[in-house]
Image (cartoon, rainbow, N blue to C red):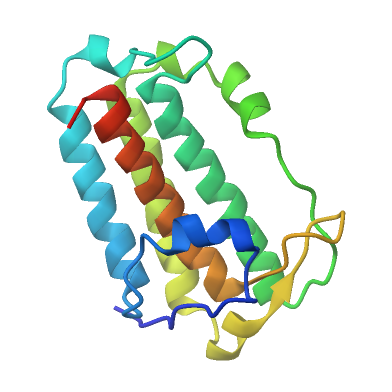
Amino acid sequence: MRLIQAPEPGEYPDYSEAYLSLVPRDGKVLEHLRENFGVIKNLLESVPEEKLLFRYAPNKWSVKEVILHIIDDERIFAYRALRYARNDSTALPGFEQDDYVKPSRADERSLASLMDEYESVRNATISLFAYLPEESFMRSGTLDDGSNRRTVRAMAYHIAGHELHHLNIIRTKYFGV
């Protein structure tokens, strides 16, 4: 699988370091994306349905909502990466994650449907990054307020790190592992 060198500080906003620091800097981010999906799928398929609806505190998301949030975030960041990779300099809008979760109705969906969507999005993300021209990885863009400049390769690592961040939360706050 294609190697994508890890981004350097300055290629992403400072707050993203919390996500990027979770991803090995070995260039194998696409392999990590494939493997991490399997880890999450195996974990979630091993727990009873009621644990997927559990909220560890009032106003916190259920596990199903966390999974759909990971999917939404991945779609949005992959779309941004595509725009930047194609040299589109249009500043892109941000998104409010809580506004996406509320209308998703994730808790009404089966785990199988969530995993099917997750796998489809993941495969599309891996394909996107696998076949981009090499020179596109250093292209970058910002949000419409001029903030959050990121390179395309930083987007790949953000997606992987964001997923690992939420996997850690699921393990500790939801399942007590």
